[in-house]
Every structure is written in structure tokens, then in C-alpha cells.
Amino acid sequence: MNFSNGTSTVTVNQRDNFLTAVINNVIVVALCISINYINSTLVHTFRKHKVYLQLNPRYILFIHLVINDMMQLILSTLLHIVSYALYTIRVGFCLILLIITILTTLNTPLNLASMAVECYIAICIPLRHGQICTVNKTYILIGLIWVASAFSILPDLFILLATEPLHFFQSKVLCDRDYVFRSSYSLKKRDASHIVFLVLVWLTILYTYFRILFAAKEATVDNTKARNTIVLHGFQLLLCVLTYVKPMFEQGLLYLLPRQYRAIRFVAHVIVQILPRFVSPIVYGLRDHTFRIHMRRYLLCKVSMRNHPQMSSCQT
Image 1 (cartoon, rainbow, N blue to C red):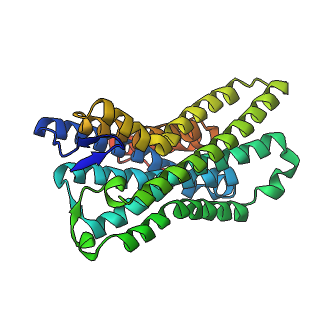
Image 2 (image 1 turned 30 degrees about the vertical axis):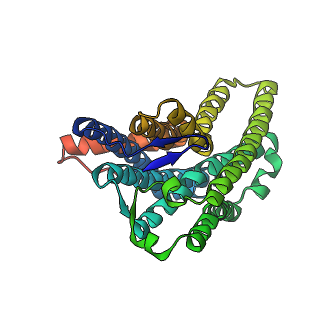
């Protein structure tokens, strides 16, 4: 299989040796399990504490981000394993996995931007926060996030149905966006939509967080934690928006290192698909006072029950 880069074509049918394939997949699966274990604990904490968490728009957006990232991690890890174990799969099955993976991947930056707006309203417009940020409006916003992501990928599906012959959907392909939605129209549309998303998300983040930073400086309380949160949030968003430039990033590296296709794909997968999901529970879960108290109680009780099963069970 060949990969076109405009002026050059590089061969991408390379296969890693057995040891490299095992190491890569073990790393990805271990990261997926570890991150999703922490995330599942966050979801459990949210579910058990309705009064404190389920009625707070900030925590609703956060848990949506966590669940979305759990779905994305599971599906992207599955696709990663399939690319090593089977290499190619049926187009129909690939489309199902690919569309959901792309949706959840695109949801993350939009969710982060929404959380930034909520934080901006809470700090800079506190008197109107209760009116603007209600539970119902939060769920509507989550629906709009999914709709916006769907508008980015569904046109590719329509282009695919209109341009590809019937036998293509019965064939096997490497389950990657560029090899399934391979029409030049889809590639141009993808780049254009990514640029639009990138600009809107970054403008939102920069505006809201500079306003929050200035508000924190004017306040009399210590703003160290707010600054640290902004730095970590910006780092997480930087990793997330790499999704928008990943195709161009990979193309540039493939042009320079045409024989390192598998290594480039593996590194890009870890940086773009996994690392942002690792930062999320740290920034909004373990560093959050409310979540940290309940999670510590839940995890410590769980360990205690394993070591002393005769002791009373945890009550949450």
C-alpha cells in the first residue's frame, strides 16, 4: 500500500517484527487499562454523590469528558491492536469503529473549550453563573458537542458512499481514516474542518483563560492553584488539538523518514490518542478537592477490604 504526499509517494506496507509489535501493544494496552481504571473510579464517585456532583454543570461536563475519553481509549486501542494482529479488516466493520473513534476524539477539545467557558463565567460573571450554567443547558451543550463533531465526519461518509464502488465495502483495508475516506474531497474537507475547529477552540481557550488569569491577579487570594490549572489545561489542550494537525504532521515525517512509517504511527498514536486522556483525570479529578476526598475514601476502603475482608464494608 502506498501513501501519497502530494509530490512523493512512500510505501507503508511495512510490518514490525514480532517483538516490536508485542512491546508496542503491551504499552498501549497497559496505558489504556491504567487510565480507564482511574476514570472508572471518577465515574463511580460522580454516580454515588448526586447532591455534590450531579447537580453541578462543571462536574457534568467533566464526567462527560471522562466517559468520552474512556470510549475513545477503548476503541482506539482496539483499532491499534487490530492493525498489528489482523492488519486489514472489512470496510463495514471498520467504518463503525472508525466513526465512533473519530467522534469521541473530536469531542475532547470541544468539551475542554466548553469547560473553559463555564469556568470563565463562574469567575468573571459569578452573579449570572446560576442563570447561564444550569443542568438542562449543560446537557444541551453536550448534545451540541456531539452534533458539531458529527458534522465533521458524516460528510466523509456521504462522500464515501457516493464515490466508492460497491465491492470496496466488501473488501478489507487498513482501518485508518486516510485509507477508508480516501477521496481527495474528503481529505480537503478534513483539513478545512480541522483548521476551523482549531481556530475556534484556541480562540475560546485563550480568551477565557487570559480573562481568568487577569481576574485571579486582581483578587486578594492566592492564585497559584489557578495558574497551575491553567498551565496543565493548556498542555492538555495542546495535546488534544494535535488531532487537527496529525495528518499534516505524519505526512511531513513520512516525507523525511519514509522507512519509519510504523514507528511514526505508533508515536503519533501515543501522543495524540493516549496522553491527553492521561492528563484529564489529573487536572480535573485528582487535583479537585471534592473528587479527591471521595476517591481517596473509596480506594482506601477497597484496599482495606482486600486485606481485611472481615471488616465492615465501605459505605458511600
